[in-house]
Length: 232
Length: 232
Image 1 (cartoon, chains in turn cyan, green):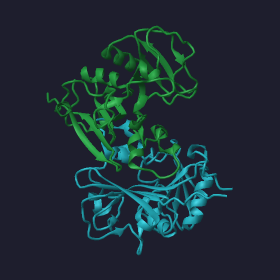
Image 2 (cartoon, one colour; image 1 turned 90 degrees about the vertical axis):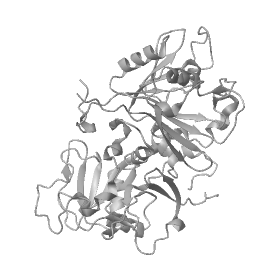
Image 3 (tube, chains in turn yellow, cyan; image 1 turned 180 degrees about the horizontal axis):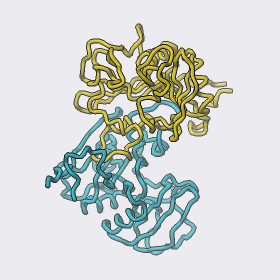
């Protein structure tokens, strides 16, 4: 039964959202460079994250110094998230069958996720666990099945699609994204991995809120258009 | 010894900040109405909090529906805060000696603070504790002494000055505020409690960042100007 439209919103059960955060895009639409290595996870597109203080993803309490609107936006990253889905290239630079079993991700022994993380790969393997609550699960699945698995791992919480760009594209193509936070940087890259799938018309599916934070940087918040409440 | 200016910021010990959040101000500078009662904590100035979703102070994970820039700003409220200092009028509508010992604040049995809270009053009394970690301490002290007591209660965390406006004014007058988040609403009140002490020139002491979020609402972030690093 649909929730009665006269019920105050806070008494309705909360719906699990699928969210993307801190997705950096160049003026020419690229979200990553072409060349990703162990040493350079962003490839030659490092300018994309200029001015970004990654510590704020864990909340502004980890920062000293001034608190900015950019920090506020960045700090949404972990709020209410119980699980992440990422592409294999975000986990590491390898492709094909796993040859380096010692690789445990870019993040050392304290990965910032602190939740289950599903790594999409055609080559499944045993999970990798960390003391801080991060557990990487390796799954060969399409976006819908991966999302179902994520919800099973962390019922009732929001799911973050962590990138990279190709993974976000697949979830956009499948119309599975409820919320997207883009950070549009005043740089051009010229080549690399574009973020947007062909033929996407975001304003048809999403309400788009925009805020500029100085230095030429713009944040966009895409919220899936709400369906009108069902009356019975 | 001052931290060496060549030390990367993240390796310096974090300084405890004194912060104000979600401070609503009318176009004519008022932060509360004249008449505050049990039933109407904002008095006739209820228009000041129009469009404000108070649930977001605990983080966006408590929200369903669209996520906005306003929510991101509101959700800074609790991040990194270990203790609040509030004026007596925020705790309740009484003044003078306590006559109603049953009054435990506006918030029922789940006050949103979940930390120690210092209530400034000339009439000290025993602390009031709640199961969720909120403990109200009643203290007769000037701003500097109250701040010292707050830091003793929650070492190494940020201190929030929770209002009302007169309390924020006192801390501004004593130059004890490091960060202030104002929400300037497109309403006029005409009378009530002004927020700003006479003769305040905020731009002399603070770097001011501004963002507009639609509907005529503007957020200001005041960050205390940084002193240049000491070289030895």
